Amino acid sequence: MRRILTILILLTAAILTAGAQTPVYQGKTGDRSVIGTVGRSSGSTVSGSGMLGGSISKEPALPSSYGKYKDEGLQDLNKAMEEREWGSEDTAWKRASSLHTIDAYQKYLARYPYGLHAGNANANIIDIRVSDALNRDHNDLPEMARTVSEDDSPTSTIIVENTTRYPLTVMYSGIDSKSVTIPPGSKTAVTLTNGRYRIAASVPVASVIPFAGGQDFSGGRYETGFCIVRR
Image 1 (tube, rainbow, N blue to C red):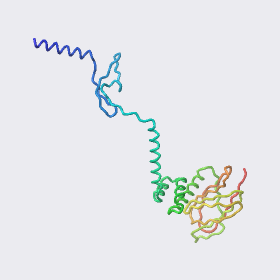
Image 2: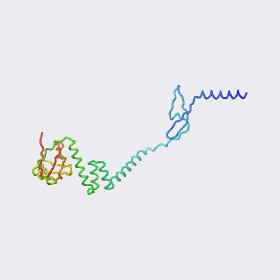
Image 3: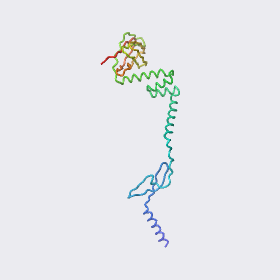
């Protein structure tokens, strides 16, 4: 009799279990492992965080002003980092050199106009501007005439005449990096260490195409002049 009763109890438990069809499912919500049941609808399994049984605590809602506080915090952090980068001449020069832009070098010069690297900053600005001129639309720079030969001289003197009606800026990028601005109808002399130079010449008029090119200087005196030709 005990054996028959045991069998009936087991059969009843099996029938109830088969009818419920509630398989156990283990998943994750957030960082918490949870165990619950997945319901069934029309023979298909529907799963989702809403179908997981059990009690799951939720994070409290962030206040509406959280975004504002977060933005202000980031701004303060950026200001602190910027002040740290530009707060001393050494770190400011390292930052300007890593960026290697005109704006970065000008920022260094604005903070440290008489700094140890002021000369290099100005030279780098000239080099970048000459490179920009060569990469943009320009007229090819004519060869400058060598009027006096001094092969033993380590330097060359360039006489530049501005016959335009505008201030003329001529930049030399090479062993030396120099920039001169010549008033209209005037001449000026520039002394450079001998070598190969990239040169750019321009006036502050958007419709006038600048000159750009290269020149070897090997000692002595060179002469050149610039004028505006209408086309």
